Image (cartoon, rainbow, N blue to C red):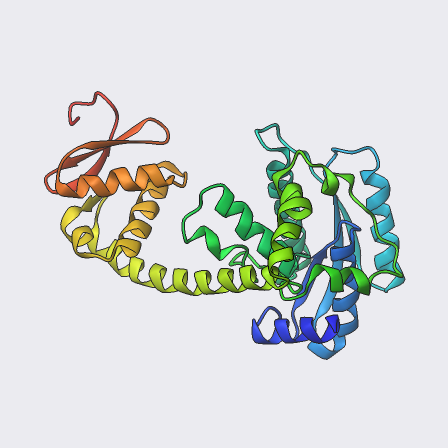
Length: 314
């Protein structure tokens, strides 16, 4: 079942192409072990070359031994393997910092080896949990798009249409590593998995599939909005300013996408809902909005302009 589902996902979502090399990021957990095993079995059929890498984040003393175990597993399948190590910078979220460091190391390894893709083991359940997590944090409809089956940087998720239970059943006779942090109730994702999702499943056994389908629909809508936003952004942009009139005429979802893109271009950060709503209120030609980084948006000559607070233009 898993083989057929991954085969279909790879082909229908165009995740891999014949002659391409793919680096599988493997922690030794059930999902990533299943991904290595499945892609190894499908490699000849798909015409791809499979490599494996495992990352030691330096956060747990047993991590180095786990990386070695993944290397032995890959070697048993005849797959090239590379052990990677990263330093996780201090930050508000250790998990987020570790994730960013891991992806950076995997993508750099893929480039070094001349591989066109990095495969990671997210499942349909991960997609559903991501949608719920973002809803609980107050996301927009853009956030409902969840995690992409493929990203522009080459990261792909061949298990994205597979249920976690099926994936774990597939590897029940394989050596896998259980990360204790996946049971730590201090993390919201764990509480969603262990508490919220079972409660929802008691009401609807297909809840994971429904949430994953919602993500697919939201992603398709986002692609349309982004295409329209490209044209509006080109029309409204005047140097570093945005003209008000084209924004006033636009559909709200397209206008908000342009405002978010503009703020990111000015600050390097994604704005929250409150900032976007404040900028929309300024389309009436008055007011001001404080952006991340203590940058101020004012209305001058029919345009939105970013200035330093207390500057002569303010």
